[in-house]
Length: 69
Image 1 (tube, rainbow, N blue to C red):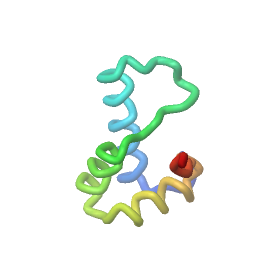
Image 2: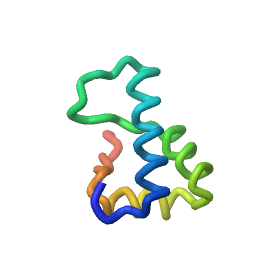
Image 3: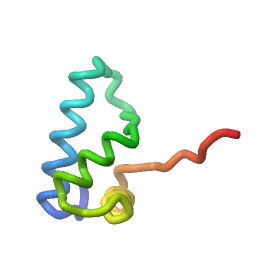
C-alpha cells in the first residue's frame, strides 16, 4: 500500500481482512469489492466515494471494471 496515508492503509487492510474472513475468499490474488464495501470505507474515513476511490487508485489498490452490457 504505497504512498497511502496511514488511516487509509489501516482501514483498507481491516476491511479486506474482514471481507476475506466473512466471504471465505482465501484465493488471495484478487479481492472484489462490492459497492457496500466501498461505502464502509467512505464512512470509516469520513470521505466521499470519489475521494476513497481516488485514494485507492493512486495507491495501486483498485481496478475498476466496466459494467458488462
